Image 1 (tube, rainbow, N blue to C red):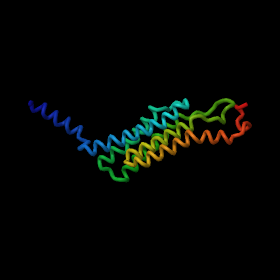
Image 2 (cartoon, rainbow, N blue to C red; image 1 turned 90 degrees about the horizontal axis):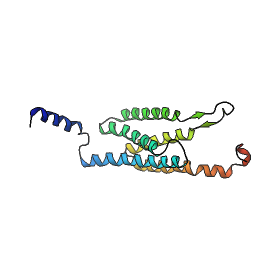
Image 3 (tube, helix red, strand yellow; image 1 turned 120 degrees about the vertical axis):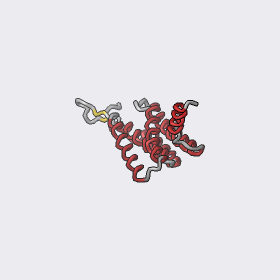
Length: 170
């Protein structure tokens, strides 16, 4: 083989050598898949209710958060460095969530839309961080509880709400 091509080949092999064995490949795959599935579950619930941030958005947020903590962890970063990464994820998701919040204008200035979507994306990122750090059971439990809040709480609130509490309802 040409020495130049051989050098290129070795450089390519080195570039793709971040996953060194089957156990590490499995770990990365399971964590990212878990983040995608759990984010997708929350996204499905939101999309089913007609909200703008649906399955794909929640899956990407969850996987992105998982990847942000997984890569430094694989590179051997210490706890302080990973803590700073998590802080960055939380702040970044805050900006993403802020873009989903709309305040009414004109006479309807007391009506705010998108807060639950923003909070859901924030929760989805936290679930992704948990999955990325190898805390799959915590991520699964958190998803279940978030689903309860999103799906069951509106039914409970509706049950106890009187018709005169909502001026839009007859």
